[in-house]
Each structure stands twice: as structure tokens, then as C-alpha cells.
Image (cartoon, rainbow, N blue to C red; front, side, top):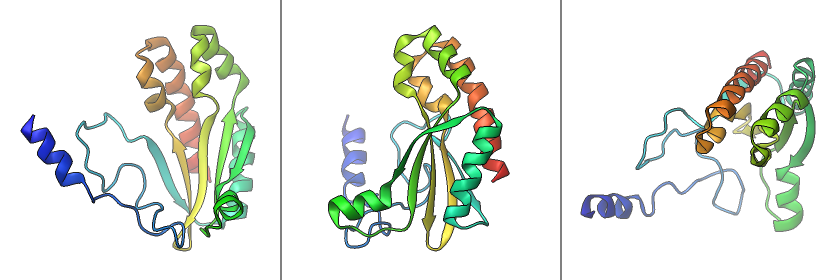
Length: 170
């Protein structure tokens, strides 16, 4: 127990994020799980992140086009940077969360377990950090792993591969 408490105390004050929201002192430091100290090591990173050559607006458009090719629609689009500016008067670089859904896979998941809808839609993020544009995908397998349901995980694995391929094509 003392070892865990020492580790927890050692973690206090660390991991504070810098950059991102100007004047807020918080934001993204790194990508995925990089640079964080964890008590339990995850089996796989929670996000698949890729830096892209195109600018923000062009990347958002390209993500939507590539998703459509795979039968996914964007059900929600949240411009976090604009929301933070409006609600909190905080400035940050462009940042959008896209909620992507494929009705075939979604219906399969919900058919297996009605509560699996809490994991939908699949979230993808496009953001700018230090002038560079990134696309990030919440890995469906990691999110769905909390269920412990093998059938759900099999569907999530299919979706993960499709969405990683979408990110790689951007």
C-alpha cells in the first residue's frame, strides 16, 4: 500500500498540461498515452494519432469524405475551439470532434447488447498543435474492452481497422 501511495504522491503536480488553451494553462501535451505515468499499463494506446500535411479545414473535409467511402456518416461535429471561446472566453488552436457512425456496425453492436450504444458514435478528432494538423481516433477496441464481451470486441476490431485505414489515407 505504501508503494502505491508513494507513487500517487509522486504523481501529484505532474502531468499538468501546457499549451492548448491560451490563458487557461491546460491543453494537450503529447498524443495518446505518451509522457504519462500510469499505475496500470494499458494493453494498447487509447488513440491512434497521425500528423497530416494538409491544413485544418482541408483535413476535416478529407476525413468526412474518407468516412463516407467506408459507409460512415458524421452524426455530430463539435468545434471545441469555438465552444471554449464562446463559453469560457478561451483561445485555442482549431479543434473539432467528429462523431462517426456506420449503421451496419452500430446495429450489429446494439443487437448484441443494447447498452453498447453508449459507445456510439466513434469519435475522431482533428486539431492543430503548434501549427501542425493531426487526426486522432479513439480506438473502438479500447473503449469497448470495458464490457468484457467478446462479441462486441470482434465488431469493434473490424471498425478499428476500417477507421485506422481512414486515418492513414488522410
